[in-house]
Image (cartoon, rainbow, N blue to C red; front, side, top):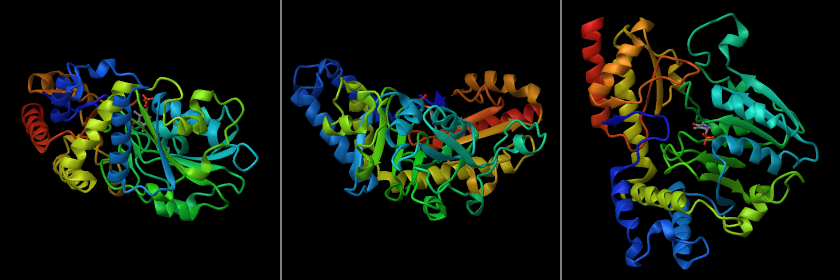
Length: 373
Ligand SMILES: *Cc1c(COP(=O)(O)O)cnc(C)c1O
């Protein structure tokens, strides 16, 4: 089965294979990895290797800490304001809204201070436009005006549902007036291509897309941003406590961190992020080339910001969508349905999806068009 789910999604086969041994006996210790305490020397090894492998993969500067936390991508939308929204003395943060997830980030932050949308690419907000995907571009950098006292400017580097990916992070940093730091939700394109993390204040990623299984949320935080949380911040979510305890202030998701560590090792032995980037470029190019070659399928995202890993698309005749999904399954293609907020279809092709999977999908789509077109 080719699993095109947006998350939880495919894990590399090698990772699952290794897990199947470690569940019975981790590292010839006679202990299952499920039985490992977060206070044990075994977890010390798992944690230190995961941390250092990730640091190496990202080429991360020593100015940053890596935190393994919980709460998921949406938890991060609250954890970030509780930790840094007050850094300039007044609780203020700016947001770029380019799709479903950045919109959710903004709404959550409103609970903690003065949050403002400083740029949006929502088509439906501007004109009465009822297309299925209201976000098809990323706001022009020149149009983004941050506020002088703002603590941070948050955006989503890859809108998983809308299929908009933005990577000119340095351009964004240069557009900031005042001393806001850049905050990025990288949940769906983390580790899929080179990203300029060293120009940001905070990035976060939930794990269930490219970094393992659900249960752990990875934060990469510039060290000078640690230790300025709001009083209301729960102790377990305070960066200072998490850093000082090496992500063990309370019981961490031991198994999820272990799986992330296996994924990092898999990445290292498969050419690292550079190699993932070229694979993902190739896979997405094949898919977009196919979609653009026929009017039977459409994707309306501006070509400069088309996501390489989450590709929403529609059938010209929407009444065929359910039939498309149903027949796909019997051709070995699963989880191809679009997000409930948008309908249509979506192919998520993260690091673990091989080129053969893309070929299978395109062949299926070609046959489907031949029959119903
Ligand atoms: C999946 C996803 C989230 C939500 O993550 P949860 O762990 O379900 O809260 C947030 N942002 C982006 C960009 C995502 O892809």
